[in-house]
Length: 225
Image (cartoon, rainbow, N blue to C red):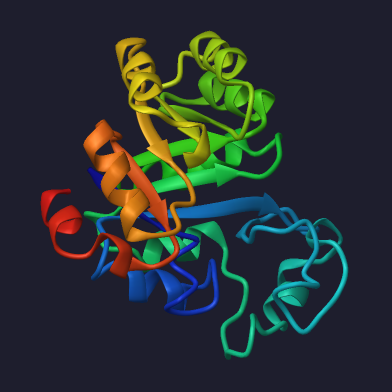
């Protein structure tokens, strides 16, 4: 079972920062990160539409230039908002990377950034249109993210020819994991809150868990990934 560092694991460093990814990668084999476009056109690694929650600034990411964003500090740290290219430069070659698209219109630039990286890359999104654009622009595998409507969401994943589905963990049962895998999908689930749930999901046969804390999957899970 793969273990993904959710946004680089915020228990280690502020989420989606280079510090978080550098701290997570010695502990977990995979990382998950969020991508959107800033006002000057670059793809940046940041979850929210606005910078208000995570930085000392305010306003929409889409309205700020890269230089303006990188003047901000993330959390209580000295870290700034990184570009997607900078994150890939900082990651070990062996790290599996789940890139979550927070919006559509990113496919061409994403494909260009990851074209020559050695990492295995999976592109996920709640936005089916964003995943369709990826399918049209590249050969990258895609995963459909969802938090409800199990049957409808599996149908969307089939339509998109997804390699994986990323359901919210509370949607899962042993039967549903089997159903998704029988349909040809890997099942990676988010954001798993405790060891007990990790163990239950492992027994059900999920392919991956996305966690905020590497301690939840220490030893057995990381060794088997």
